Structure formats: structure tokens, C-alpha cells
Length: 280
Image (cartoon, rainbow, N blue to C red; front, side, top):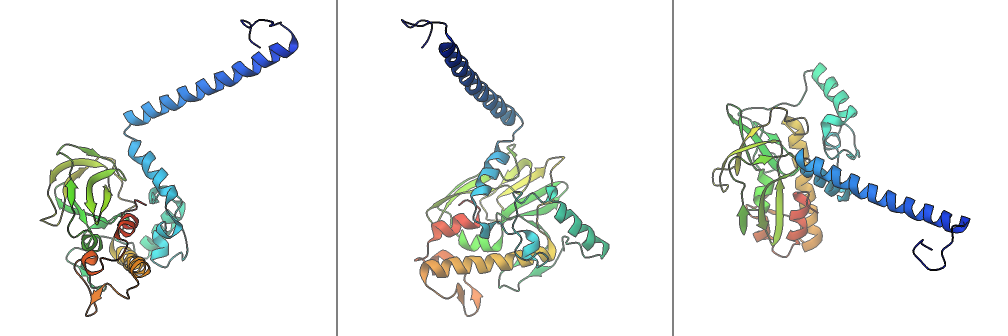
């Protein structure tokens, strides 16, 4: 069928075959070259974290993709399709404008701590859907740590890997890694920025970061919406524990216990931890 084969003839059948064959080869090679170029381009632009996150987000069950406005009761049942990137959501922008016009836009609330769930939820900071907080510290520096619910699930990490000072983090990229309840967890950064300092959680935070000039805070929860989201998350964790361990509550005397895994060792903490940190 090829010119170098015995018996080949330049007739219509052979010419048609060669045309189709080399067209397919050209398309395949072009596709591979374009994919390689785009990969190199995204790597140079530090877009790898965004690509990985959108792949992982697409694999999350709908129960873990609830819109922030569904959590607050504004849009019941609404599911996010944009990777929690609220800055690209026209509906979110419209709702925020309405709230702002009534002086009800969610905002940071210094010196206020909500404890309605038996958990301390300071409202002086931003909260990310991956269960990290971003707290203003001094100047342009923010601290990143685990919120109270995540801290009670990851009370005693078996291992911890923190980035070096000077590391550039990308929102939804890996901020630090740890092994919790037998599961390897990559905690996501809530924002773009440069690592200034690290700690092992003994001060309530793991990283201090200086946000990038164009870093977006739009996707982060604050004020009343953080409280309502945390209420939903507490219910979700309770349900997952109850389903996997057949126990009624993660509480002692009406208050959540300090170490969920120690209180309910029979629960499937590998799956629960993965679901909380959006790593399923």
C-alpha cells in the first residue's frame, strides 16, 4: 500500500489511501505539538495548579459543589459549575450588588466570634471552601491555618510538609501537605502569594503569606455567609460519620468533641478527610 512496497501502483485507490493516512498522521502530530506547547505555556504561567484544580473539581460529587448562595439560603439547591471561582459568576456579582445596596454585604467582623455550633468561628478572617482561613495580620501579611472544624478532624497529623519561605503559592494549588487519619491530604492555598513564614500549627496557623498584587479575595467567605457555610459543613461531617460508623453524634454533653477521629475511630476517616479538604 506504500510506494516502497512491492506491487504498489499509482492508481486512485492507493492515492486515496495515502492521502487519508498522511492526513491522519498530520492531525495526530499537530495535536501532540499543540498539547506540548500549551503545557509548556501553562507551566511558564504557573497555571498548573488551576488546571489540576478544575480537573479535581469536575470529579467532586454535587453534594460537595454547593454554591455559597445555596448555603446562605439565597439560592436553595444551586450547584457551582465554576470551580468556586465566584469572580467569574454573573449571578454572584448581581447578588453582591443587591446586598451592598442594602448595606448587608458580608464583610470581616473584627473581635466577633460565632460559637453557635459549639465551635469557635472568628469572623475577623476569610474562609475558603477547602477549610482554611486567611487572617489579616500586619501590613500586607496574612496567616493561613485550618478552621476549627478541620482542626478537630486533623487534630494530630501523622506527618507535615510545609513549603519554604519564598515559595510562590497559587490559589487552589497545594499550600502544604500532611497525613491525617491515614490519608494523604494536600491542603489548598486560599490565595495567590509568597510564603513569608511557616509554623507547625502551634500558633494557630501554618503559613504567613504576602498576597500577590492581583490576588483575588472574591471566592472567600466572610461574615454571616461563613457561619451558614460552616453550619452546613458541620452537618455534612456529622452525616458522613453517622453513615460510616452508625453513631448518632460527634458531641459530648451537647458540645462537639475536641478530636473527632479519636472519639469515633470506627468511622471512615480517610473518606471523610478527603471530602472535607475537597480531595476526593
